[in-house]
Image (cartoon, rainbow, N blue to C red; front, side, top):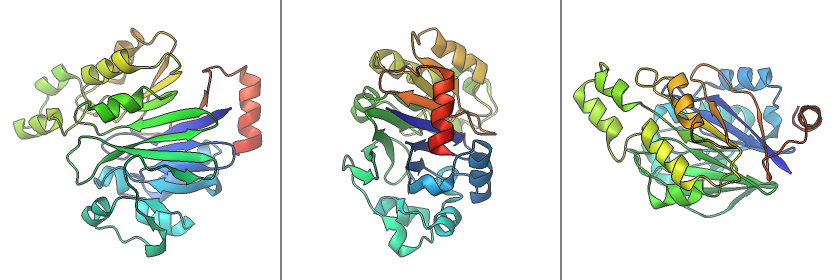
Length: 274
């Protein structure tokens, strides 16, 4: 029993995350163009026909840039709160707009998606847990500080896209103006490497097989630095870093954290996802 996940892009230039089973999938945020979504999924041999819905975390442009075109072109329902829709000024097709409330289960085929509130400087921000086949995957980015909602949901995840936006020293020594550094560090800004690591160390369940460090700052972080930092504490959890320039590989997430062998995994991908 498994889910398949990938980051199509992750960073201030655009965010888009894929979670699916063998029959259907959802996207969390579409902060890159429709064309780029198509190109990256094609390179991974993932079919857009399997995408059944899009979930929007908040209205910032790096999370909604390609949403209008993708939703209209493929007639994809968009799950978005009323406040986020209003603040986004998106022109979405009315019958494709679906509102949601925190913790209400949303059934997409054999997937269940639950949103939970977080702290971020947006009108009504949420993160998501996508569940299917006994597996839970979290998409936890754009988090100013770790609240109880974030901690409790992280504890449930077999895999998670987890924000590690900046290194404190790199931010201090960087060229950003003071007001922007203050905004990034605020309780409604972004998670630092150390804040993300504290969440990881203190709340990671034993069964978490993968953490994909996400939304790294181009100027205030270093993929090698943050991967090394997490790897020291990862134990049996595999640590990956999502790119701001391209898609990641497809990660096969199972309930027990074990893929029997690479041949079996490849066979599953070829016969169910492509």
